Length: 435
Ligand code: GLU
Image 1 (cartoon, helix red, strand yellow):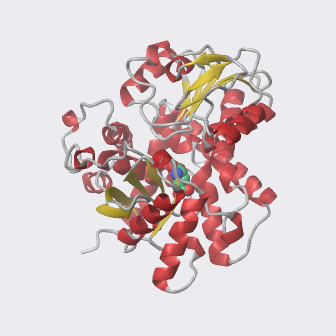
Image 2 (cartoon, helix red, strand yellow; image 1 turned 120 degrees about the horizontal axis):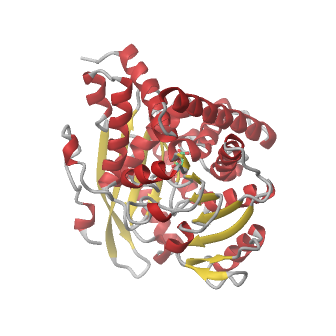
């Protein structure tokens, strides 16, 4: 584990806009969008400064006993970006590319995301630099428990509530919940969301992000006067978000013509049976060798002639290098930060309708909110109720962002940032500065 992977690329205090030079730094991409929206909102300098800074950043070393008896030290991060509207909320990812700037950007996005859908949470994010695919279940459990112990001072249903993200799942959430509960001496289900249903998880949480993507994509198609039946769809990333998003859009009548994961993908203009592909991945772990289409790379998939593109993997896949060649009419950002700021300008020029991440993938955290409410109330809802309430929130939020974008003649992303920032800023104004 090399320590230099974690070196923050910069000190987070960056009042100088001209320093936002790197297209691939998600924090800089987030900040450039924030600045544009703040300018349009004419945000007062004090609140502007507050909202450009994370509240808290924790970097921690995590020693883990490996199965071979050796000790490895991993690096973990947890960032609380803003908690003015409620407890910090945000996932934990296990990935080799985790770094402080990325996690800080993701924590800020969680803040804006929760505000866009108007749920009473702030934003946070966590990550551990590791390659979970090379680790045993026992090693992952020890890593998760020790990371949880290292950040325990921030965790709690009223302070900071993790959830799954890239390469983490229900089982990891169960370990976090158990570790926290053992430390405080009683069972606290509401300390994490995305848990197994048997231990306080919510029905419909697993499918929630993909379902949210489906709901807003349908709205975008209607807005643009396009038919849902037969609309072609390419999906990058076949994990929780991409596979469920593809499955639900297929059930609505879309034709899924390409899917991919980190091993590559398949293209089939006649359509891919998503249920069959999900069953294949269940058996083989990845899409590698999936026979029902022609092989395609992740880069090629993004440039296919389709109605809808659903990037549902990682950040910075649509950049200034490939944006001009994107042919999709709608991009639904299932991933966080898949489009760089430079690419966005190019897509705008081409007239691509982008449903921004902080709206498109907000279904997950919305049902996390439902899960937290159910845990605290000790009363659990039917799946039908969860789906109805999720549909209502996503539909309403899409409409609010679309209205704002028309009113200010800005794209959907700027409108979503404006809506989110104005909601967070209002709370800061009301609360004042504690001295
Ligand atoms: N990791 C998901 C996201 O990026 C869910 C976060 C949550 O539910 O707290 O939105």
